[in-house]
Length: 232
Image (tube, rainbow, N blue to C red):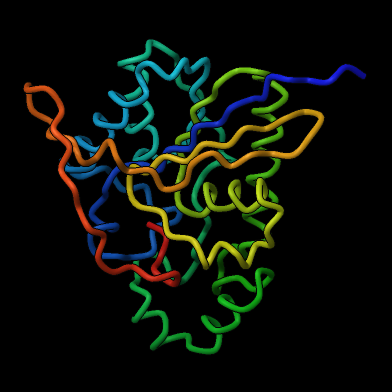
């Protein structure tokens, strides 16, 4: 079998800010919209990606991701396709709550969830189950868009799961990553070799003023949000 030199490149974009991300609440299956700031973040990401050579855009069906994807589609002219495999994890009874509220009401269940990828929130989905679902969606992308650059617009858990898969890391590693809203990651997938993580949690495009003037880089220091902060 000949060596494949050209990888399939996945650009992983987390959706922009939502009301629940502002409040640091678990937002899995909740179909919340972007805030106005979230729309601006999506537009900034679209500007960044306009010259990335994107051949396909695949998004979670949740509207915060779909809106973000359509901002990029407007710039690139590439149509958007939805894949349910890239939706956020189902938090079950924890949906809409903060980490502190969950810790107060379900301390034992939360400890189990943080320790064991097979443990699920009450009525929800485990990290192991979500990772399997995301892996299946990735295989569909890799089969359908070989050697192309594909933008996947998704959420915290699916993007972290893809990063973990690329690094051959266990699902428990997801608790040791932080991903900002509208952040970009890039992974090269080789059909005959390992995946290569090229960037993670890149938010440089969000430091640009969004007005009509040329982009001006503004440095920001991230404050807060440890590994147990909820995906939003």
